[in-house]
Image: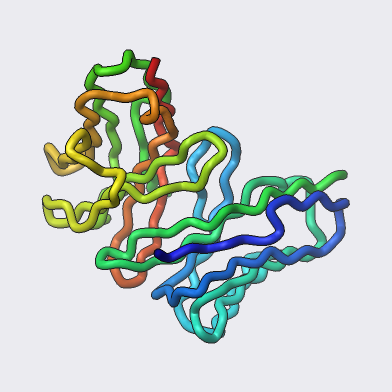
Length: 111
Length: 114
């Protein structure tokens, strides 16, 4: 069974601080996606990483896919209150690349 | 910007009743998915659909569930006889290709079974 574990589970920080969220598995994924989800809404795609070692940047967010394609990290620089939300990683696998979702990291950025 | 839409946003039903959840995927996408999220839990895969047939389904997707693409735009999930434990948010997603697999999610339907 493919599992994705995210850490930390909860994170409360002050505006302007930096943070890193980790997504780890013992399984290899063909691609890995990061989503952000607001309460009562659907996950919104932030980025897809495909190649081992790949790094992608989206403004203040930096995403990295592990060399072995088993883990990933999300780094946020100078967090803003608007970054508050649930961050989900999701690995693609199986015959149709169904997504296996991680356990989620709930981020609260205090002004 | 194209997006996945879902209706209704909230459905309340009695146990044992049939419900149909509707989705309109992004128009040029070819792969369609249903996921569900029980309150406070992870998003779980239910089923994937391509070329008018089910490609893969999870253990959750038993005989009570079915999917259909009745026309060129809609993608539906039917639950034949709802149970209390079917109460969840149901998300539809679509992707253009299988290999790159960027899946875009709809806003969800909150299903409450009483």
